[in-house]
Length: 405
Ligand code: SAH
Ligand code: TMP
Ligand code: ZN
Image (cartoon, rainbow, N blue to C red):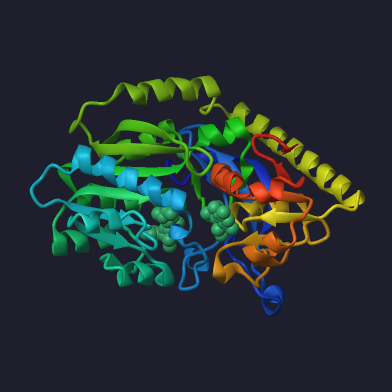
């Protein structure tokens, strides 16, 4: 029996996706034989409502000097983080010479907005290759994993922070208590933590099970995040649903009593109750929905194949690793995956070993169907692929349901 990483209560598994490789572990044929696998099992804690992985690879297997994810590959996300930075600046940077600290700052996609405005900032980013891109662009970055020890060092060198930010990183960190303790140390009395992660409510509503992979140790809700920070004398003071990454939530957290709590927090909690996010049965239903989704997608791909049509995957996302491995989708069903990220090209998808090819190859010879692994970027992608669709090219999507568009 596993114990909850947040409250230590015994926790039940509600699904296993079977053996999974590292989601961002795109690899070369000579590495196939040594490929690492773990069991992707997920559980729900009935005591504190936290949904979490029950087994996770060690962090150095995921975040290192060859990390494949560069945030700035999406222009849409760059716009999003400009808005995020503006929100923080306007609402919470009131002191004369404010300091902003961000964890998981990657290539500087968020912090450059503060750097450009001459605001003191510090990025904490353990993956060396992406951290170096940020540093080359003049973003102050420490190449390290964040925890309470590092927080003390930062306070010693730079003083306390007005804002502590994290986008798509808090949910990556299994040792959340050390992170929360570090944030408590690092924040000024009126300082705020503002962070964003894929939202459990969206996963449940859209059956977007591909959000579940090695890097995502937790699947947050307002309820579970409130329970976590309450253990550290902090409270959620505002929540703002976001349209990115297939549905995310932005949480604003402050020292207990430092700010009044907005109505949005209570409203979202009520919504979570109506979605059943605090009930075990909801996750048993989610498992049944996931199994159905797999069945339909595999059936569709096999049918398309039987009719002699070509299918190419669109975007070698981390999420696609869960889908291809769980559904058993190999080169037999999907010819290759088109992707714009140079370090993924010429490599093979984790576990299923589908070739990843440059975007040019998609454009040069359009397939009959494109399986949209980057469904969370659907707007951006579909609007630029008119030339694929006009002569009859079709999209296959699987979130919120399996469909041909
Ligand atoms: N914030 C960016 C990057 C998200 S990817 C965005 O939203 O696009 C997650 C990033 O967090 C990776 O760059 C990874 O190296 C980093 N990371 C992982 N564990 C971390 C930790 N313990 N402390 C700080 N950063 C971490
Ligand atoms: P992610 O979902 O794990 O963030 O990965 C996004 C991947 O999608 C990244 O490798 C780049 C790729 N991509 C494309 O190939 N074409 C596109 O138009 C977009 C938006 C992303
Ligand atoms: Zn718990």
